[in-house]
Length: 268
Image (cartoon, rainbow, N blue to C red; front, side, top):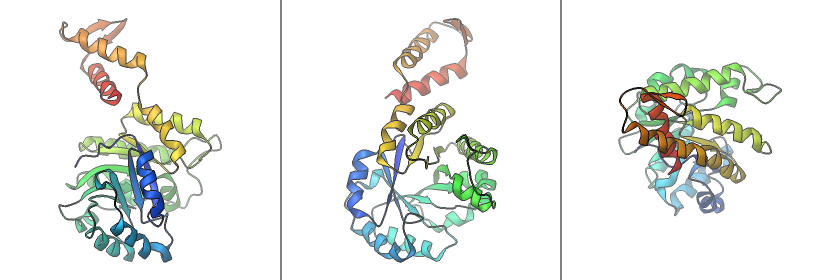
């Protein structure tokens, strides 16, 4: 399947089954997390929760542990006992590691280490990968750093490079890209700015870690009325024009028309 579930994708710990249904009601899709959100001692019970879960599998993504861990083997065995078929692979570092999944599964490769970002082109080319996501904190940790952001709240250059590379490689291979979580839960203005930039840059969604972030992300991805009207008008005008033309004081050619079509696609 192609990742097209909506812009706000909410993480939910797999060891909190009482939250599953509520999370799914609040967000466009839910990532049931078997990795960082679950302590090692709780992973077995979290897998049992997945097997017992009675929620729409088409709007659920399961984040499994990294393929180079023992926990991954148990995660893979658990998935085969469920109807969940969209899997986010934590700390994906090579395309070869994704061969552990058969054709039943569609994969979201989470590139969040130096090796993962370096191999993003090969990972994106894997036939079972439908989307890429990047992660800032694990990336910086893998480099021996201490923070992905500057004092003003913006990303450091290395994080911005990783974000851009994941988006570019996903796009180059016809796959979708998901932007990283905004971990400052009270900074909704910062989240709104980053999500708006993600939408304008071409990301398909932004992941989040709290239900209060969902509405902010949805609003950021939804174009305003004036932009939608411009998109409709310029596309209508193109039907009577040939090649490059002038519209409302601006040169319009095919790339601009593609921008307009993207706006209308997000407005639906």
